[in-house]
Image (cartoon, rainbow, N blue to C red; front, side, top):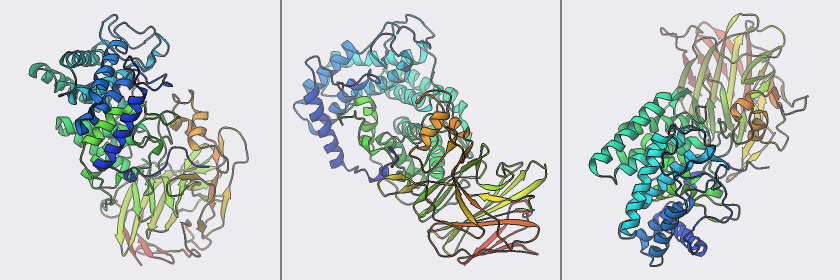
Length: 609
């Protein structure tokens, strides 16, 4: 079984002018064949996300005309624009819409579904999308759109902006991507207004970003991020927010968008494995956007000097949103317009700077969470997620069902690169059920092909073992496939265990259920509205790798040693000396300094082959 939405890396999509011409040519032929006598360009099967879709395709036709002057397009553009202005602009309040601040304002908005009161909750983002489609058409109108229609569209766009910012609460779904999209719409609209009005709208857009988005950022893994559906980051919507920040900076030049975009880009770079896999989010765990992410990943990947294009997108939406029959849907047309207009090239090489929340070299990577516990391990083409035991999730020593991975104090990190090796030492103070403070020292070393993990902790009572992750998926090149197999060896006895109990809160990696499906099943709300991150945290137990302690560790320590990825037998020997712990394996020797650290309490590490 393959994960349905994590397909090929986005930088593999052709992005030459010729490739984009071919994309627009396909859209044009589909649109001209679909165009109704009334000027409607909506997909016949479109029910929701519909209020902006015809206008979105109109904008793509306008872009195609500006690039190639196809003589068939002026009539289609003007006819479809007239349809939107006549049939898809609503000024009477939608019955049941809960987020109005002003009733009967008469301001225009776009509906998520067309029937009055059918599902009004989506009207705010639909109106943001309609504003973005409208300003794109205005940008492309020269020589194409009739003057009266252009003036009417500008008036409607200005009304969309006022409805979004005056008649309703701003960002009622607490969705960062929608909110930043609204700001982008205001910035683009401002360029079409008389100077005084334009400056007012531009200032209002920046102020909304500062006060309503930036001031409410959420911290995760050391970064401040625009909140998404109540969480810090979502796999589908986070890169879309990055694209909005890219467009905001492109058109405004405001450094605040560059600064925040670079911060989000570095965060994505740190949490993303080298192979492009990632999971987690408050709206979707494994659903990945596709072309909607290209602009932001490409633009900010170039700015921070890292290969963000390795992000695995959903290539079924490689160029534009489509329905099940493959027919074009204009819902995200604005992003394709901007992507084509932007000339940034992909940065294709990894950043070499050490990153606190990631270790990466060659085909090996470890993404760490805020507690510096591995969130995803990649080695040998396999992706490992944190395992669960007794409702605790993570990677670390376990005694009597208690997992030692949540810190009780400052987590210290030391990164070292030497002789073709990359290493990260994490020192974490922890407290168990006996209330005794211990220090878990975890050493991660990779040669770019395999990953060695050595964990040392003061002697634990009972019979401890290392919870060493859950094999979850493997890289098939252009697909990510589910797996329950592990290429892992251990100095102590190694077991791959599976839950003994059944039910939604026990995850067996051998099943066909994906992590996202399991997370939604445990969430409080139905699929699409529940928080999968919260649901996944309710997991009681999972498939797990369990490694027993090394038999010949220093008498006052428990030591665990495993290797992920290819290789022969693992030979890890740990000895305590005056200068600290010496870790010798078949591939390297490391010296871990005293627990107290250097003069500033920071851990000390030396490494050589």
